[in-house]
Structure formats: structure tokens, C-alpha cells
Length: 366
Ligand code: G6P
Image 1 (cartoon, rainbow, N blue to C red):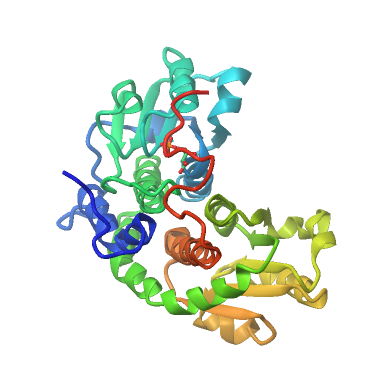
Image 2 (cartoon, protein in one colour; image 1 turned 90 degrees about the vertical axis):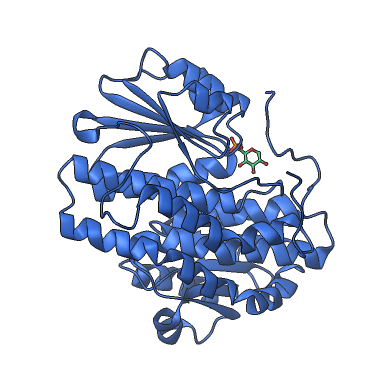
């Protein structure tokens, strides 16, 4: 069927707005209501797995970097993450008991497919997380996990990213259960929190106007820096990618702790710095980095929850308020303001949001 913009100005706007709905669909499949366990479309047993290797490109790669934190922290499973074009030519040794996981919206990205083929016969199991179940990557893996995002038309990935994250989190929880690191009670807590995500994402979308106003100011910048710690670091990478893809503003992301090791030299009154910092275990560390930016007259755009903004939001340029969620879920939630910021900045600049110059939806040649 023909996909239309359903009253939105761009496909990207429609796809951002659709997220509560498509994520609910993914949740229905992986965490069916009547059960507090993760349901996969086939057999996977993580109890004998000793190492997880995740490979992808672009936004799907940042979903993998986020998932590394989940698999290591919740399932205590060692994880290697790599960019497909590097992985395939480096030809790394694949140790015994490795599970290889490939993430791709299209399922046709040439480098990711080549990396998968390199792992065939070497890895114990090959899994993929895809949006297109008939794709090459899905067909060539032992088991494909669909993300149920529906067709994504905007070149800059949005709903596929949050659906990938949702499926990867479910998979990390399954791994944690298989490996004996999660009690039934803890699993039930996660399930409840994840089932609440569609509502939480809807309230994040209500910040649209506040983000649009912030974006008017960001659209005047030449460079933008994104900072985050822990689970917010990969999201900072994704936020910077979104902004440069569609607004053509140079954007870079750093782990907040690396600020002192280089990017602080760039901070002046012309530099917007997006600080992604829910009031989590690393909040105080993030805030001290944020203060280093403020001390150099950097313009801080703080994205946090009410508690975080109350505690540290006094001197910031602008603050965007997100609902409070269980810490593990913050990357899925904070993806919304990162996407909306890029979107409204691009609209303010008048660029072609859905078809940014030089970019392709799916890179099927090298
Ligand atoms: C292109 C797209 C990105 C996407 C990347 C990987 O660069 O513009 O949005 O993240 O390819 O694509 P895949 O289909 O493998 O997820």
C-alpha cells in the first residue's frame, strides 16, 4: 500500500509522531501482556553464550552501542560492537561460543550483509534485528527479530531506531534471565516499565513546541556539541548524527567525561551544547561537566527530567523537560527530543528534511 504523510508536513514528522504506536506493536510481540517473560520468534539460549558481537552501520550502529550497555550491565555478557565496514575487512577472530547480531532497518546494507557472511560458519548463532523480514540480512541469519516499525520513508531513521532499541532491550532481558542475572520479580518490573513506554513517549512528544523554539536558536549555530554519559553517550552520538544529516550543521558527540580531553577547547558563546542528562546515577558527574561548559559561556541546552532541571537548570540557555522513567529506558525516551531538535532545526533552515542531500535510505553498494 502507498504510504502517505497522514497530514504531516514531512514523513520524518509523521514517523517521529508514530513512535508510541509502533513501539506498542513491538512490545505486544516481545512482551505479551499475559506473560512476564520475553517471547522471541524462535529458540535462542544465552546461557552458553560467552560473547556477543554486534555489527551495523549508521543509526543501527548507535542502537548497538546502546545495547552494549544493556547486555553488559543487565545480562553480564561481554559485548563487542563494531561498524560493519571496519569489521568486515579487519576479519577479527571469532572466539568459540560467540553469538553474532546484525542490526539493519533495511536488511540490505552491503557492509552489514558482508559482515554477516564473514561470521557464517564462525559464530555459533547469527541473529538479526531488522525492519524488513524478507530482506537479505533476515534470510541469511539463523533467526531474524522483526522490529515492527512499519515502512520508514524519511532518510534519517527515527522510529526504526526506537523500535530497534525496544527489541534489543527485550533481548538483553532474555539474556539476563537465561544467564540467571534477573529474578522473576525484576523481570516483571522491567516488563511493566516497558509496557508504560508508549504513554511516556506520548508525553515526550508534547514537548514539541518547546523543542521547536529551542531549534530556532540552534539553527543559527555553525557547530553543535552533544554530551552524555552512560546510556546517554550513544544517544548523544545519534542526536549529533540526526542533526548533521538533515540540517547540515556540523555536530559532534562526546562522552561527557572526554570534554576535558579536547572539545572544551571549542567552547565559546557561539557554541550550543546539548546535554542529555536524566537524573540518574551519573547525573552529578554530567552536571559538573555542564558547569565547565557554562563557565566558558557555552550555551547549554539541557534535556532532563523535572528533578534534574530543578537541581541544575538555573543558568542554562534552555531546558527541555522529559518524564521520569526507569533508568534503562532513558535512551528510548530521550531519542524523541533528539529527533525533534534535528527536525525543527532543519525545518528552520529550510533544508529537504526527507531527502537530505547526498544521503541514501539504504546503502546497498560500497
Ligand atoms: C543509511 C541511512 C541511515 C541508516 C544506515 C544503515 O546511512 O541513511 O538512516 O541508519 O544507512 O541502514 P540500515 O538499513 O542497515 O539500518
